[in-house]
Image (cartoon, rainbow, N blue to C red):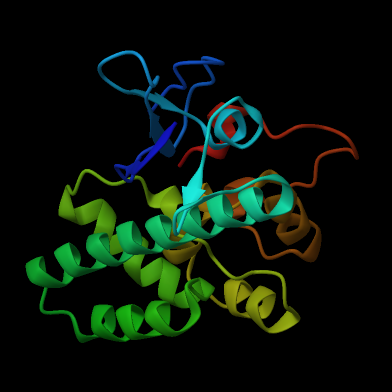
Length: 197
């Protein structure tokens, strides 16, 4: 049975007790009805496994179950991001971070410029949070142009949190940081060591 407890430490270092998938950000606590203690599993195992999930006193199944788990996960992820922002604001008097926090509260994502401000502050803060927990809006033309107008230092701050597909798109547009500006052949993968700044 799902206990209703979820964990998000703001890092991608958790492991599922059932499928052993690693590098998880969120885990869900489950317990066996006849045993003591709980274990932490991933959302995929919780969604398809033999676990009872209840909401408002009734068991959930099918799409309703998946929707409920998805909604719970999104709420927890946003709460964790807000907590990281709150901790950063407590350590800094930079008014730009206040504006980043307001933007995040309204959009639940960050524009490239705001992401650069936040991620540079996060890297200087020594907080125990992974920068990849913040989602950066980069799909629209305006956001791609905004990324293209960032300084080299700002681009390098945002680059590690972007997916390989978005990085390749920015490379093809000529907006990538200089060290990543060469477009690889179609189908080539971004090597992990080059993905890190």
